[in-house]
Image 1: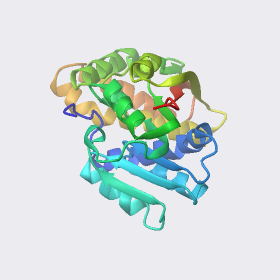
Image 2: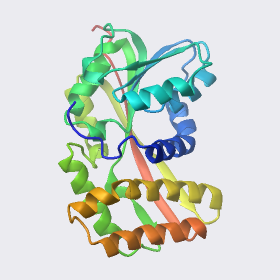
Image 3: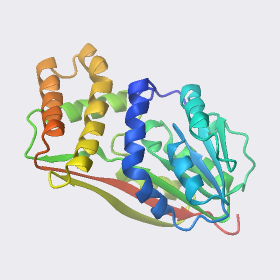
Image 4: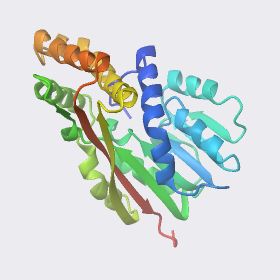
Length: 269
């Protein structure tokens, strides 16, 4: 894969990923269903935080994580020193050496939006899944970022963020494409669902965590967007300042949802 990961792998980005995992891992593990004594592969495992949580929940399962970034893979290994049922492999998910039909479940989160050929990635997930096994993904659709009261300039900044991601070879609207991607990859029994992220000032701790994640995403691309004159500095910084104010003093509502898809490899494959 030659496309550029929009978020990068800096220490600040790794801190953001830890926060995002803290917010979303429990829900995703529940979505995977019963994973007792299964073989599982995480395509694009990042820091390995989700793998660690999964390994603790299902100590009898074997879990393999694939990660293209050496920096991320190294941290993933450090994050899972005591999990004997975890293996982290530094590899491109499209060029791995895993045998066909190795896993009961293969999954990816927040990966397909960053690749030029998501169908090829899902085909590889299918290849490494056992006949009758499960394939799962969770992805963004960035048209679904809503704040109330509205943040002045936010829509403009997010539109340019999406344009930047497209320039880098990704798709900020991949969530709506998941059914077609899975169908093109030969997955059967495809089911779609939403995972809502609803945060209000009534739960300040969770609200702050979610808004911190949102702020760090923008700060991570600030230099790139300003260098390419994608949005005026005053507008960009105004949006970041407004989000920062809501972190300091939670106000209003933040609405978002993940797009999820589950399917199966044909039992006759």
